[in-house]
View 1 (cartoon, rainbow, N blue to C red):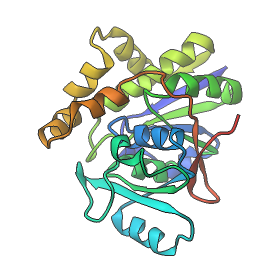
View 2 (cartoon, helix red, strand yellow; view 1 turned 30 degrees about the vertical axis):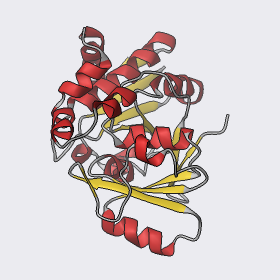
View 3 (cartoon, rainbow, N blue to C red; view 1 turned 90 degrees about the vertical axis):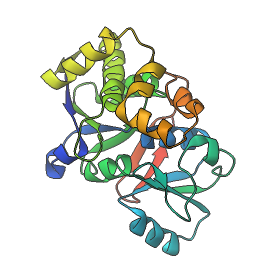
View 4 (tube, rainbow, N blue to C red; view 1 turned 180 degrees about the vertical axis):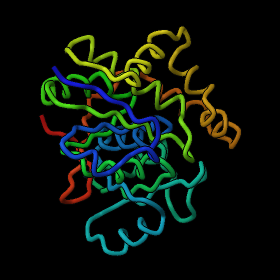
Length: 243
């Protein structure tokens, strides 16, 4: 029987304590949703970086076709592509996506000492649960909510609860109190995923900044993609698991 633990925000990650565990990072609005979609749309890999300076340095030394995308505090970084699927879908196929975001790519890097590191979202949670059950059923699985600016975020907690619901539906796991609470939260809501994401603080801020609601509607779809994004510590790239 495996164990499922949950971290509320990236600032709570103790990197060395990730060793020996399988970790799954969530940044539903939008980094891990973008990663899932980019790989599904044919990106060669996603390269998650800490910030725009590291992204620019990576781009300067990268010798393969790439797309440079990123946001900082919800605004597109100057000279970068907007890091949403609507903007990346036409250009990302066959290229590496160098991605810098305020929270999600930072959480991935802080979690990178895990023995196995994945990213997930509502888009691919169902497939991720199947993969975890098949490959990590007797291990400790740590779900990492990225949060924002040292604060817990509802949408990441909801995304983690969604994954837990699929895990316990088909597998046998012992849940930490935090993981159990995420499951109860997810199961107890009558609102649709779109309503949950739109009503979250980050959702409201992004809409106020002019984001089209269709972006939230897309990432609120559960189980529409079958991609399993996995981080490779040797290359620092996230690639789709080949089945």
